Length: 343
Image: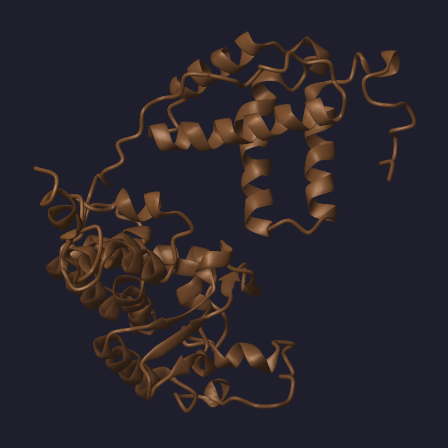
Protein backbone atom coordinates (compact mmCIF):
# COMPACT_ATOMS: atom_id res chain seq x y z
CA UNK A 1 0.00 0.00 0.00
CA UNK A 2 1.47 3.38 -1.01
CA UNK A 3 2.02 5.94 1.69
CA UNK A 4 0.75 9.46 1.06
CA UNK A 5 3.28 11.35 -1.02
CA UNK A 6 4.88 8.19 -2.42
CA UNK A 7 3.60 8.58 -5.97
CA UNK A 8 7.10 7.92 -7.28
CA UNK A 9 8.75 4.56 -6.78
CA UNK A 10 11.54 4.77 -4.23
CA UNK A 11 14.89 4.76 -5.93
CA UNK A 12 13.63 6.66 -8.99
CA UNK A 13 15.29 9.96 -10.02
CA UNK A 14 12.48 11.88 -8.32
CA UNK A 15 13.55 10.32 -5.01
CA UNK A 16 17.23 11.20 -5.33
CA UNK A 17 16.92 14.33 -3.20
CA UNK A 18 14.83 12.84 -0.43
CA UNK A 19 16.47 13.35 2.91
CA UNK A 20 17.15 10.77 5.58
CA UNK A 21 14.56 12.51 7.77
CA UNK A 22 11.83 11.69 5.21
CA UNK A 23 12.57 7.97 5.32
CA UNK A 24 12.92 8.01 9.11
CA UNK A 25 9.41 9.44 9.42
CA UNK A 26 8.06 6.87 6.96
CA UNK A 27 9.73 4.04 8.86
CA UNK A 28 8.17 5.10 12.16
CA UNK A 29 4.78 5.59 10.51
CA UNK A 30 4.90 2.09 9.05
CA UNK A 31 5.85 0.50 12.38
CA UNK A 32 2.96 2.26 14.09
CA UNK A 33 0.56 1.12 11.36
CA UNK A 34 1.72 -2.44 11.91
CA UNK A 35 1.08 -2.16 15.66
CA UNK A 36 4.67 -2.78 16.68
CA UNK A 37 5.38 -2.63 20.41
CA UNK A 38 4.78 0.86 21.68
CA UNK A 39 7.89 0.99 23.85
CA UNK A 40 10.08 -0.28 21.02
CA UNK A 41 8.77 2.31 18.56
CA UNK A 42 9.19 5.03 21.20
CA UNK A 43 12.81 3.97 21.63
CA UNK A 44 13.36 4.19 17.87
CA UNK A 45 11.81 7.66 17.81
CA UNK A 46 14.04 8.80 20.67
CA UNK A 47 17.19 7.49 18.99
CA UNK A 48 16.23 9.13 15.71
CA UNK A 49 15.30 12.46 17.27
CA UNK A 50 18.24 12.74 19.66
CA UNK A 51 21.10 11.17 17.71
CA UNK A 52 20.52 10.00 14.14
CA UNK A 53 18.64 12.92 12.58
CA UNK A 54 20.92 15.59 14.07
CA UNK A 55 23.81 13.66 12.51
CA UNK A 56 22.49 12.92 8.99
CA UNK A 57 18.82 13.94 8.89
CA UNK A 58 19.26 16.74 6.36
CA UNK A 59 21.40 14.72 3.96
CA UNK A 60 20.05 13.04 0.82
CA UNK A 61 19.60 9.39 1.70
CA UNK A 62 21.40 8.32 -1.48
CA UNK A 63 24.58 10.03 -0.30
CA UNK A 64 25.12 7.71 2.68
CA UNK A 65 28.15 5.43 2.62
CA UNK A 66 29.71 2.83 4.89
CA UNK A 67 32.09 5.46 6.27
CA UNK A 68 29.06 7.30 7.67
CA UNK A 69 28.27 4.29 9.85
CA UNK A 70 31.78 4.34 11.30
CA UNK A 71 31.64 8.11 11.76
CA UNK A 72 28.28 7.76 13.51
CA UNK A 73 29.75 5.33 16.06
CA UNK A 74 32.61 7.78 16.71
CA UNK A 75 30.03 10.54 17.15
CA UNK A 76 28.07 8.46 19.66
CA UNK A 77 31.19 7.63 21.64
CA UNK A 78 31.86 11.35 22.05
CA UNK A 79 28.28 12.12 23.14
CA UNK A 80 28.20 12.86 26.92
CA UNK A 81 24.60 11.69 27.37
CA UNK A 82 25.53 8.15 26.25
CA UNK A 83 27.32 6.96 29.35
CA UNK A 84 27.97 3.35 28.48
CA UNK A 85 29.01 1.19 25.50
CA UNK A 86 25.67 -0.60 25.79
CA UNK A 87 23.83 2.68 25.14
CA UNK A 88 25.96 3.34 22.07
CA UNK A 89 25.17 -0.12 20.73
CA UNK A 90 21.43 0.35 21.30
CA UNK A 91 21.42 3.58 19.28
CA UNK A 92 23.48 1.97 16.54
CA UNK A 93 20.91 -0.84 16.31
CA UNK A 94 18.34 1.79 15.38
CA UNK A 95 20.77 3.19 12.80
CA UNK A 96 21.12 -0.30 11.34
CA UNK A 97 17.34 -0.75 11.22
CA UNK A 98 17.01 2.57 9.40
CA UNK A 99 19.70 1.62 6.87
CA UNK A 100 17.97 -1.69 6.19
CA UNK A 101 14.70 0.19 5.72
CA UNK A 102 16.38 2.46 3.16
CA UNK A 103 17.67 -0.58 1.28
CA UNK A 104 14.19 -2.15 1.35
CA UNK A 105 12.85 1.09 -0.14
CA UNK A 106 15.30 0.68 -3.05
CA UNK A 107 17.51 3.56 -2.00
CA UNK A 108 20.80 2.76 -3.79
CA UNK A 109 23.10 2.35 -0.79
CA UNK A 110 26.17 0.12 -0.48
CA UNK A 111 24.96 -3.29 0.66
CA UNK A 112 27.69 -3.37 3.30
CA UNK A 113 26.78 0.00 4.79
CA UNK A 114 26.39 -1.47 8.30
CA UNK A 115 28.50 -4.61 7.90
CA UNK A 116 31.51 -5.21 10.13
CA UNK A 117 31.27 -1.82 11.82
CA UNK A 118 33.47 -1.92 14.90
CA UNK A 119 31.44 -1.26 18.03
CA UNK A 120 32.64 -0.70 21.60
CA UNK A 121 33.11 -3.76 23.78
CA UNK A 122 30.57 -4.44 26.50
CA UNK A 123 31.66 -6.11 29.72
CA UNK A 124 29.36 -9.12 29.87
CA UNK A 125 29.73 -9.36 33.64
CA UNK A 126 27.36 -7.03 35.37
CA UNK A 127 28.92 -3.92 36.81
CA UNK A 128 27.09 -4.16 40.11
CA UNK A 129 25.68 -7.30 41.70
CA UNK A 130 23.14 -6.93 44.48
CA UNK A 131 23.59 -8.95 47.66
CA UNK A 132 20.65 -10.35 49.67
CA UNK A 133 21.33 -7.68 52.29
CA UNK A 134 21.10 -4.92 49.68
CA UNK A 135 17.86 -6.30 48.27
CA UNK A 136 16.37 -6.42 51.77
CA UNK A 137 17.59 -2.86 52.37
CA UNK A 138 15.96 -1.68 49.13
CA UNK A 139 12.67 -3.33 50.09
CA UNK A 140 12.77 -1.84 53.60
CA UNK A 141 13.52 1.60 52.18
CA UNK A 142 10.67 1.33 49.68
CA UNK A 143 8.39 0.36 52.57
CA UNK A 144 9.19 3.75 54.09
CA UNK A 145 9.05 5.74 50.86
CA UNK A 146 5.92 4.13 49.35
CA UNK A 147 4.76 0.91 51.05
CA UNK A 148 2.45 0.05 48.14
CA UNK A 149 5.52 -0.41 45.93
CA UNK A 150 7.54 -2.65 48.26
CA UNK A 151 6.09 -5.85 46.85
CA UNK A 152 7.38 -4.87 43.39
CA UNK A 153 10.92 -5.11 44.79
CA UNK A 154 10.23 -8.65 46.01
CA UNK A 155 8.60 -9.61 42.70
CA UNK A 156 11.77 -8.54 40.91
CA UNK A 157 14.22 -10.15 43.32
CA UNK A 158 12.39 -13.40 44.10
CA UNK A 159 10.30 -13.86 40.96
CA UNK A 160 12.51 -12.34 38.30
CA UNK A 161 9.74 -10.02 37.11
CA UNK A 162 10.64 -6.98 35.06
CA UNK A 163 9.33 -3.63 36.19
CA UNK A 164 6.40 -3.63 33.75
CA UNK A 165 5.53 -7.23 34.67
CA UNK A 166 5.54 -6.44 38.38
CA UNK A 167 3.29 -3.43 37.86
CA UNK A 168 1.02 -5.44 35.55
CA UNK A 169 0.58 -8.52 37.76
CA UNK A 170 -3.03 -9.11 38.82
CA UNK A 171 -4.40 -10.96 41.82
CA UNK A 172 -6.10 -13.54 39.64
CA UNK A 173 -2.69 -14.35 38.09
CA UNK A 174 -1.61 -15.89 41.40
CA UNK A 175 -2.20 -19.55 42.31
CA UNK A 176 -1.89 -19.36 46.08
CA UNK A 177 -2.17 -23.10 46.65
CA UNK A 178 0.52 -24.09 44.12
CA UNK A 179 2.85 -21.09 44.58
CA UNK A 180 2.53 -20.09 40.92
CA UNK A 181 2.49 -16.76 39.10
CA UNK A 182 0.98 -16.53 35.63
CA UNK A 183 2.97 -13.93 33.72
CA UNK A 184 0.83 -12.92 30.75
CA UNK A 185 1.04 -9.13 30.37
CA UNK A 186 2.88 -6.06 31.53
CA UNK A 187 1.96 -2.48 32.37
CA UNK A 188 3.08 0.31 30.03
CA UNK A 189 1.89 3.90 30.21
CA UNK A 190 -0.86 2.86 32.62
CA UNK A 191 -2.24 0.23 30.24
CA UNK A 192 -1.88 -3.52 29.76
CA UNK A 193 0.63 -4.38 27.04
CA UNK A 194 2.20 -7.53 25.54
CA UNK A 195 5.24 -9.00 27.23
CA UNK A 196 8.79 -8.33 26.04
CA UNK A 197 9.28 -11.73 24.35
CA UNK A 198 7.40 -14.99 23.83
CA UNK A 199 9.67 -16.56 26.46
CA UNK A 200 8.41 -13.99 28.97
CA UNK A 201 4.95 -15.58 28.91
CA UNK A 202 5.00 -18.34 31.51
CA UNK A 203 3.42 -19.93 34.53
CA UNK A 204 6.21 -19.46 37.02
CA UNK A 205 6.79 -21.49 40.21
CA UNK A 206 7.98 -19.19 42.97
CA UNK A 207 9.40 -19.51 46.45
CA UNK A 208 6.88 -19.55 49.35
CA UNK A 209 8.74 -16.50 50.68
CA UNK A 210 7.43 -14.47 47.74
CA UNK A 211 3.91 -15.80 48.22
CA UNK A 212 4.12 -14.67 51.86
CA UNK A 213 5.17 -11.18 50.72
CA UNK A 214 2.23 -11.06 48.31
CA UNK A 215 -0.16 -12.21 51.04
CA UNK A 216 1.12 -9.51 53.40
CA UNK A 217 0.75 -6.91 50.67
CA UNK A 218 -2.78 -8.10 49.95
CA UNK A 219 -3.78 -7.77 53.59
CA UNK A 220 -2.61 -4.15 53.52
CA UNK A 221 -3.45 -2.96 50.02
CA UNK A 222 -5.41 -5.69 48.28
CA UNK A 223 -8.99 -5.88 47.13
CA UNK A 224 -10.38 -4.84 50.48
CA UNK A 225 -7.78 -2.18 51.23
CA UNK A 226 -8.59 1.28 52.54
CA UNK A 227 -11.05 3.33 50.54
CA UNK A 228 -13.71 2.34 47.99
CA UNK A 229 -11.19 2.26 45.12
CA UNK A 230 -9.79 -1.02 46.46
CA UNK A 231 -12.96 -3.00 45.74
CA UNK A 232 -13.17 -5.06 42.57
CA UNK A 233 -16.40 -4.42 40.72
CA UNK A 234 -17.99 -5.74 37.57
CA UNK A 235 -19.07 -2.22 36.61
CA UNK A 236 -17.18 0.68 35.09
CA UNK A 237 -16.07 3.39 37.50
CA UNK A 238 -17.51 6.85 36.98
CA UNK A 239 -14.02 8.34 36.49
CA UNK A 240 -13.57 6.22 33.37
CA UNK A 241 -11.03 3.77 34.79
CA UNK A 242 -11.86 0.24 33.65
CA UNK A 243 -12.77 -1.99 36.60
CA UNK A 244 -10.37 -4.74 35.58
CA UNK A 245 -7.42 -2.45 36.37
CA UNK A 246 -8.45 -2.69 40.04
CA UNK A 247 -7.25 -6.28 40.03
CA UNK A 248 -3.64 -5.10 39.86
CA UNK A 249 -1.40 -6.16 42.70
CA UNK A 250 0.54 -2.88 42.65
CA UNK A 251 -1.47 0.35 42.41
CA UNK A 252 -0.86 3.91 43.45
CA UNK A 253 -2.45 5.62 46.42
CA UNK A 254 -5.50 6.51 44.31
CA UNK A 255 -6.14 2.93 43.23
CA UNK A 256 -4.89 3.54 39.70
CA UNK A 257 -2.20 1.81 37.63
CA UNK A 258 1.27 3.02 38.57
CA UNK A 259 2.94 5.39 36.12
CA UNK A 260 6.60 4.65 35.35
CA UNK A 261 7.67 8.18 36.29
CA UNK A 262 6.05 7.84 39.71
CA UNK A 263 7.57 4.43 40.33
CA UNK A 264 11.08 5.49 39.37
CA UNK A 265 10.84 8.64 41.48
CA UNK A 266 10.08 6.44 44.50
CA UNK A 267 12.69 3.88 43.40
CA UNK A 268 15.48 6.46 43.44
CA UNK A 269 14.32 7.78 46.80
CA UNK A 270 14.48 4.23 48.15
CA UNK A 271 17.97 3.71 46.72
CA UNK A 272 19.16 6.85 48.47
CA UNK A 273 17.58 5.82 51.76
CA UNK A 274 19.06 2.30 51.47
CA UNK A 275 22.53 3.63 50.66
CA UNK A 276 22.65 1.95 47.25
CA UNK A 277 24.37 3.48 44.21
CA UNK A 278 22.04 5.91 42.38
CA UNK A 279 22.61 4.02 39.11
CA UNK A 280 21.10 0.80 40.52
CA UNK A 281 18.41 -0.28 38.06
CA UNK A 282 15.27 -2.29 38.76
CA UNK A 283 16.62 -4.77 36.21
CA UNK A 284 19.37 -5.64 38.72
CA UNK A 285 16.70 -7.39 40.81
CA UNK A 286 16.07 -9.81 37.95
CA UNK A 287 19.82 -10.38 37.66
CA UNK A 288 19.90 -11.08 41.38
CA UNK A 289 17.11 -13.62 40.89
CA UNK A 290 18.94 -15.43 38.10
CA UNK A 291 22.26 -15.30 39.93
CA UNK A 292 20.80 -16.75 43.14
CA UNK A 293 19.11 -19.58 41.23
CA UNK A 294 22.36 -20.38 39.43
CA UNK A 295 24.59 -20.24 42.49
CA UNK A 296 22.25 -22.28 44.65
CA UNK A 297 23.40 -25.54 43.07
CA UNK A 298 19.78 -26.72 43.07
CA UNK A 299 18.93 -26.01 39.42
CA UNK A 300 20.87 -26.71 36.23
CA UNK A 301 21.51 -23.81 33.81
CA UNK A 302 18.72 -24.67 31.38
CA UNK A 303 16.26 -24.78 34.26
CA UNK A 304 17.54 -21.39 35.38
CA UNK A 305 17.03 -20.11 31.83
CA UNK A 306 13.42 -21.31 31.86
CA UNK A 307 12.75 -19.80 35.28
CA UNK A 308 14.40 -16.53 34.22
CA UNK A 309 12.33 -16.57 31.01
CA UNK A 310 15.33 -15.68 28.87
CA UNK A 311 14.83 -16.21 25.14
CA UNK A 312 18.50 -17.18 24.69
CA UNK A 313 20.76 -19.10 27.03
CA UNK A 314 23.49 -16.51 26.47
CA UNK A 315 21.36 -14.06 28.46
CA UNK A 316 21.44 -16.45 31.41
CA UNK A 317 25.09 -17.38 30.98
CA UNK A 318 26.23 -13.75 31.03
CA UNK A 319 24.87 -13.35 34.56
CA UNK A 320 26.87 -16.18 36.10
CA UNK A 321 30.16 -15.20 37.71
CA UNK A 322 31.44 -18.75 37.19
CA UNK A 323 30.47 -21.35 34.54
CA UNK A 324 27.68 -23.47 36.07
CA UNK A 325 27.21 -27.21 35.97
CA UNK A 326 26.14 -28.36 32.52
CA UNK A 327 23.33 -30.60 33.81
CA UNK A 328 21.45 -31.22 36.98
CA UNK A 329 22.00 -34.31 39.15
CA UNK A 330 23.98 -36.05 36.44
CA UNK A 331 27.23 -38.01 36.31
CA UNK A 332 28.92 -38.84 33.00
CA UNK A 333 30.45 -42.33 32.78
CA UNK A 334 30.00 -43.08 29.08
CA UNK A 335 33.61 -42.68 28.06
CA UNK A 336 34.99 -44.90 30.81
CA UNK A 337 33.05 -47.82 29.36
CA UNK A 338 33.86 -46.95 25.75
CA UNK A 339 37.60 -46.76 26.22
CA UNK A 340 37.96 -49.52 28.81
CA UNK A 341 38.11 -52.08 25.96
CA UNK A 342 40.35 -50.02 23.67
CA UNK A 343 43.62 -50.37 25.54
